[in-house]
Image 1 (cartoon, rainbow, N blue to C red):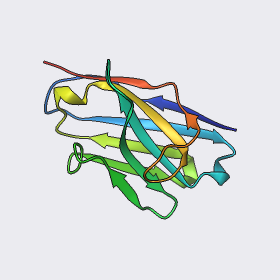
Image 2 (cartoon, rainbow, N blue to C red):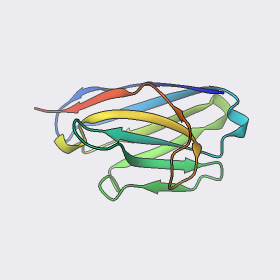
Image 3 (cartoon, helix red, strand yellow):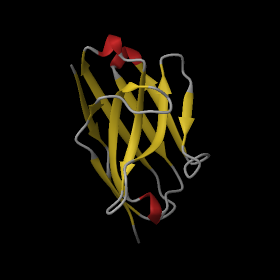
Image 4 (tube, one colour):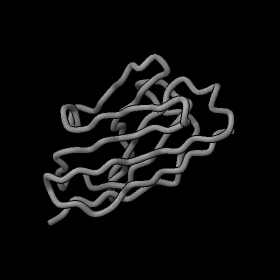
Length: 118
């Protein structure tokens, strides 16, 4: 089993920045890839960014050049640096583990709310 806990969400103005963190615990040595997904009200959950053990990454077109995913294996942490935030980035952001760069795994965090508004 893998436990994931997100932190770092909040309210930010358009053009601002936030950094999300995901703390992983449990059988994380089995994990090949981790990632961030988000779900806005009335919308399906969508991939934001993923990263694998080799440092390979995958980003949604809507966040390329603005968001950066990173992973600190020694600390069992994953991060999402979000810059130049837009109102359309407003969503609940979920940490995920156990999948691949293109698909999510079975492990999900509880989610953290990100609201971009003036």
